[in-house]
Image 1 (cartoon, one colour):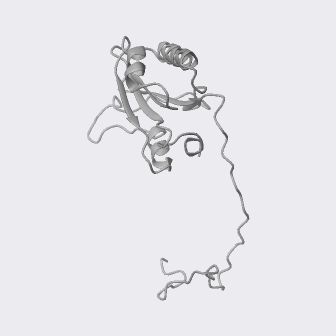
Image 2: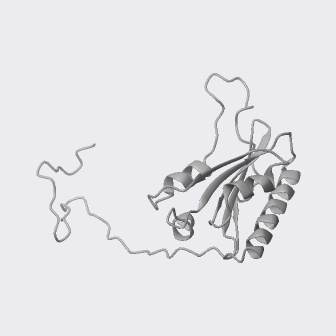
Image 3: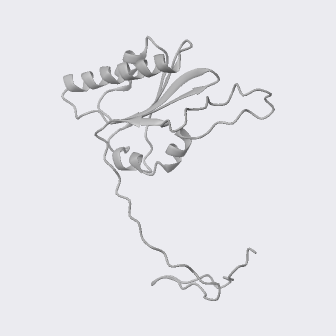
Length: 178
């Protein structure tokens, strides 16, 4: 929901993957990410662009740190690569035009399992501390409006009714899957 509310292809927003050339501890990687974001924020201010909006998901896989970063447009991929170049590689892509980033969020927050046939957990993600967030974002991200509505419980002896303008399929049977 946060992705859908703040980022879109129409704006030219980017999805980056930041990797390191060498091994980094989690704390050293966290410092490198914050230094990179500070440089991006400063560059945006110099170019008189809107404030930086970002979501950062950092992870450790196979003992190596990397991060997925979604940020608003304004700075070119070449400039972003130049800021990160001394540390490692930048993979960049523009967000797709679906404006539904549920699948992207599921991919970024997924839990890795060891590869099939692997005897060790080398390919698995490092476990996080209890209650540790998997992502961090800028403070100026818009909060999505969540609409809740009450649903009436369905009793066993009533057939469902189609909403106005819709109709049930002719072969519909209640409890057919049991």
